[in-house]
Image (tube, rainbow over all chains, first blue to last red; front, top):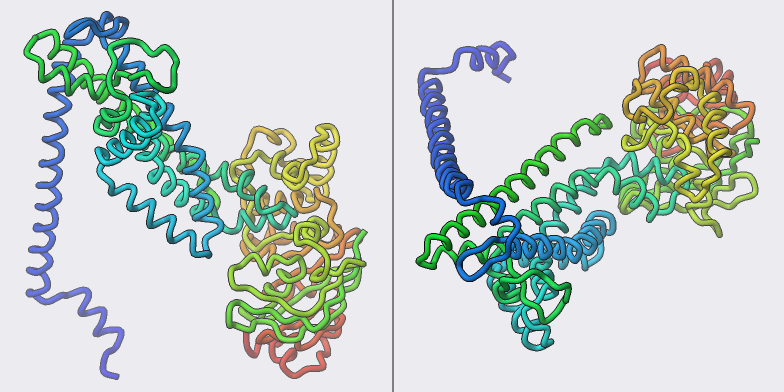
Length: 299
Length: 252
């Protein structure tokens, strides 16, 4: 053959002019696109954050945090409470089945059910949240007669969170090295013990990241809640059904369309709180993911 | 105390790939038996068949019979029962990274429902001493993660973890191949100590290692057991030409 190691080295070390120009063009085009995208996304984010934080922080005071809404004035206590109750309710309903489905997809992959489950989970991600809301309205609020309620709202949010938690759990379990499962089996552990006591602790940080992101998504949702939780200006009395519930995203939407200044103030305060909450959750999720690298010494 | 292992007509597959052909051999109790051979010859698959680890790989299949002591491994016993009587040490140290040193050593007992704290303390200490790791870790038992130790220490931790469940047989799948010479010699010393109480089967790439630690040696080639005899005979006067070629370094 005519090609020697010297020829190859020469071609690598002294590329043709055409190659050099081509590289320069692709290099600058790549960097240009990166910069443009960064500018576009960065400026949009900074603009939104600036508006929300400047106007929201100005509107925020102790009264907003401690009083319930009265007409177009008062505070947001009812909405803050509602967002937390619905968010936590959604998690309680979506985390156990989500992790269970993730375990099934990762550990018992092989039958016909796993691909079907994965497909349905992907479809569920793509369903517009307003459709989930309307589905909740038709089934729970109307047909089952629960009315606008915490139960219907939490279930709607759980439907939105479930596919995220399932997918992150599946990935988290798949990342647990096979050698650790074998170590467990080698000690005479049952498959269930290996999954729950060896794999689950390893997968927990990654699952937690998914759970936090799902929480951030549900806190930011409005559409599914309008149809299921309704709206209320009062604090929750603890009923799961037949009691509408307030939440921050609705407060933004409803108050910003009112003419009064006090209403706008509340809308911006609510926007500030939602953004802050989502931001804090995202940062915690990042930190958890980052910390995980500390445990990752096992190859 | 250790028990002997009788293997008869053992065949194993990975999917359509027939990796072990008609293996028949008797491994004596309370001795160390080494299995040597080139990469891919089936020696690892063979030890993984002894404690039914092979079948945890998707698509794996095993036929034939294995008796460990009075237990028929592939007939009438569950894999979980079998594995509780057989300790296994793997090629790469695999301590549980989310568990402390103490929890790693006691894992086999705790995860299988044993909760007596005092007994656990004793077993952890005894196992770590047996694995010659006690002096190095006794002050960090519950403070340090198993993954924070050095590679050689991790492997001795894994040996302690296997010893803690008081097995009758120890399977070691190239236990020193990922370790430096100092750690390797510590593991070999350990095997020497342990073989009076346990039946040890060690897979190794390193022929000197086999010669140093084992009473008996088996030579595998292309999924078949070519020769199985006393280590002395295998290394000085093998009866098969292929064994001689391998140990004199003509291939592999």
